[in-house]
Length: 77
Image 1 (cartoon, rainbow, N blue to C red):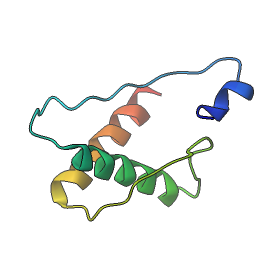
Image 2 (cartoon, rainbow, N blue to C red):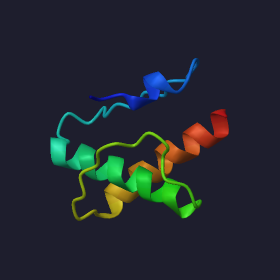
Image 3 (cartoon, rainbow, N blue to C red):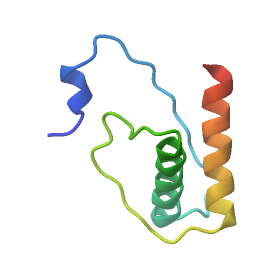
Image 4 (tube, helix red, strand yellow):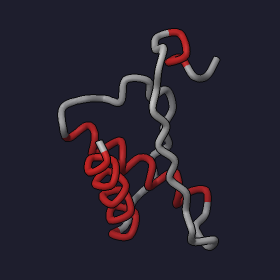
C-alpha cells in the first residue's frame, strides 16, 4: 500500500515539519495536517498523492501553524 508516489516520480523533494511543542497531541498534528491540505485545496489543487487524511475541528492555533508551514514551503520554492 502506502506511498503511491514511488511508482510515479523519479525525483522528489522532502519537506519535514516537526512540532517543537511536546504538548501537541496526535489529534493536534492531524488537525494541522488537514489545515495544510485545506490551504493547498484553496489554490485549486488536491495534493497529488494525498492518500489519507484525518479531519478534526480546528482552532486558531492549528490554522496559524498550517499557514506558517505553507508560507515556509512557498518561500523556499
